[in-house]
Image 1 (tube, rainbow, N blue to C red):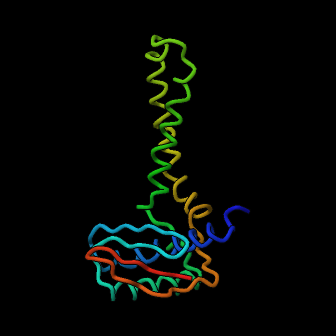
Image 2: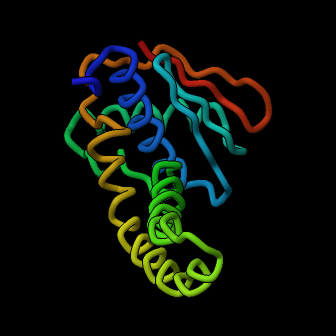
Image 3: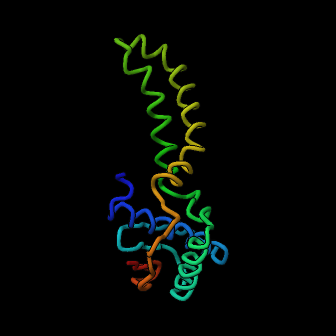
Length: 161
């Protein structure tokens, strides 16, 4: 399966570790934080200390390996944002694409808005489902944290292998 190809699987595992680390950092910090994962680790953006990033990343690694897969799902994930934007937009676009004239598009707008609302309601559970099954992998396998590097104020790099 494509999701288990090496670079994709490594990114999905790092994405899960990133989310879990953000969950644990959020217990201590009440500031905005974000992350970006790739096959070799992830970046954490937020005003946190390197020591806390190290501690939380290691705890997140341990907890994911012990089966706490819920830590891999994060409400602020871009997957949720994409689902919340694309599904309603697609649902709203569908009835309008076949209208042959501006007159019919005008009369289809209320229907398109209802479909957009329906799409938004569907996107609420879709985002976490996509995270769980597509964009993260809570089973870290042999993934190990190699290091945590301070890049500059508000930015850290967690390197994995």
